[in-house]
Length: 154
Image 1 (tube, helix red, strand yellow):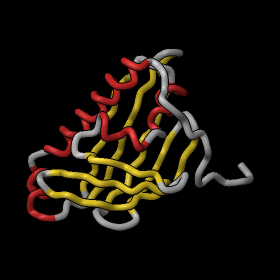
Image 2 (cartoon, one colour):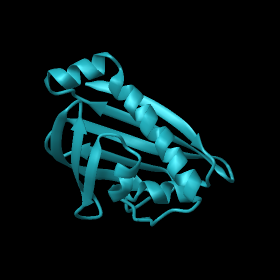
Image 3 (cartoon, one colour):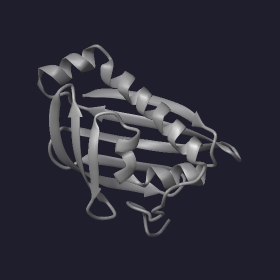
């Protein structure tokens, strides 16, 4: 497994940043290689990607979600991956977004891209494009503020 960690500071309040990140179907507007995402339930997404010339489709399950704090997921089928995005309020109008991703590169093209750190550079670029996307809008396009994977007793 390969682990990548990247973070970026966004000049938007944490609630707005978090709300926008829950709009998974809009990821293709700022994530390179994501052709489309369809959300089939509050916790299940279907991804279609094109990375290193390889097209893949897979489902991912949100395994933890805490509004304004974090979203964690894991692939259900297809390429092995899991990750968490964490949101930290730095100031009233600034949020640090930290993305941690673990994945198993499949096939020669993905293994080569991983060894050359191309996937890490892509993720860094995706975060920069997300920053530009939300900062230029200033407001979220929608929100899902439900909780997933929480202990009902606190």
